[in-house]
Image (cartoon, rainbow, N blue to C red; front, side):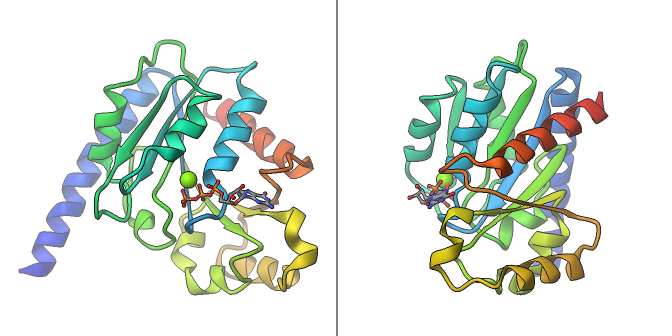
Length: 218
Ligand SMILES: Nc1nc2c(ncn2[C@@H]2O[C@H](COP(=O)(O)OP(=O)(O)OP(=O)(O)O)[C@@H](O)[C@H]2O)c(=O)[nH]1
Ligand SMILES: [Mg+2]
């Protein structure tokens, strides 16, 4: 019975995600689902990404959080089309959340939609939102063991980000172990090491990766 209910929820989610994908592609929008543990730097990355790319393209953002609108308030300073979704006790975004938020966005001329998922390395992995790519973010302060402990977050990723590189020298984090754990789980995946706060060369690589993917889809 329980299995049946879970299967039905996922089936419904997949149907809605398919509708989201169709609508977004029809509008010419490239969509990123950004996931990572609490505090790894997702909102900071979105702020910086919008700042770096907004002269070249029109961007909208959907941000998921349990109860507050704090992330949306931060991002809205850089991106007027920012919609906060509150999931209550829900630990991830589902396709229906994105669908509702999409209704609040004027997509005319929008090229890129970034969806910041709820801070969590487990639940967001299994839910298709209608995105083009999933991006998994880790950071140097959360411990080097995270890819190995959350392998599905690596497996689902089109690119893996390692944030807070500016803190590498202050924390115990064996970067070679991180790289080899990620590669063992997903050999072909690209790893981008960056500091979203400082805005380093890694951030240029990240925005370049987005532009390449957008061009490839066209
Ligand atoms: N030193 C350093 N701090 C960072 C970096 N990126 C983010 N931070 C800091 O990390 C803290 C959390 O950053 P957020 O961007 O709010 O993280 P988040 O992943 O959006 O957090 P949740 O939405 O709560 O899951 C803030 O104090 C940021 O300033 C970075 O590259 N370097
Ligand atoms: Mg955030």
